[in-house]
Length: 449
Image (cartoon, rainbow, N blue to C red):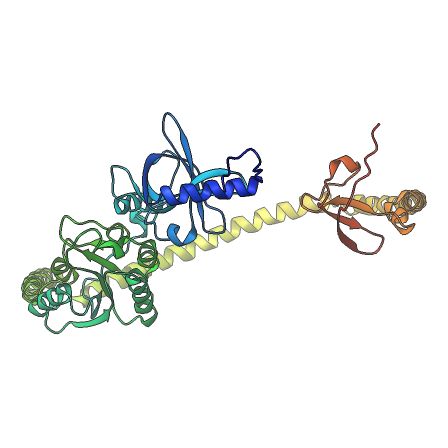
């Protein structure tokens, strides 16, 4: 059938379906480059955005199944290369690119995801030095989270065996690359903290490409390292490799072997330090004993016969006793004379008469005050009764008892006095004479002034 015949009349839906078929058959697996704008991530998990350049723009959609595989997050202004197929969205009659894959233009997707996550966690304070814990100087047991078959665990065990053979090592085997490896690493860190059997943790793996090391750049691993109560040494890749785990960990080691060297000093080093400390202690004790011995000799030479010293002290006690007795006798005589003079003056100026007069006046004032207070309280009681009666007449509760209600906005609590202040569907709170009721506005009758 010739659809362009004058007699052929197409519905909008039919024409749109035909156009969609033409586009989908002829524009599959396209690569499109442009600048991202109008990015939207609804709760459905899909991603909607627009690709544009200086001359045109193209609506794009990436459904949830494809969007969840992106290692980075789309942002406005990002230069993007997207792969997909052209289709038509019937409801709006617009053609759009249904994206299956996307990558930043000029920089890899993994590098972009690394930069975005690093900036996000840095703003949250996960890299701050204030959150980092000092490593124990003499750990009794070391935990290692890595692959049981990789080179990293062998390097760590060899170094620890050489440096401190009696140190216990607890290995938590995990996958260090591939799908789900990041979750295993995070789970291992949490489990080690739950068990609380080690004093320090080494988390890492040997070298590799950015893709191989990516498990240590996942947010789930970074947050597990941050919440760990056990100090963590991050040993990921080679010296030039940096991961998000390195920034969050309490200490970063350039290689797994270096982590083993950091975690504890070698037995020879500790033995040398112990011998040096023992030598210093022995020398200090010897010097201290010599100083005390010299001081004791000096004190012994300066010590006199205690019998002579006691005799002199006994004689001085006798002299002071005589002087004390004489002084007390003279002081007592002076105090007695002063007391007698004060007693005569007190008797001459006895205040008892004035006290009796003031007591009578006080009793009279108390009686008058009691009568005045009683009268004033009676007046206040009458005034209070009158005011209470007036308030009862004007009380809004009386109005509510007659069947009225007070309506207020359900969110703000502001009283509603005008129907124009509410919208259909809004929740209102009605205060009744007894209790409250929450209702929804179904319709409005607005009265214009």
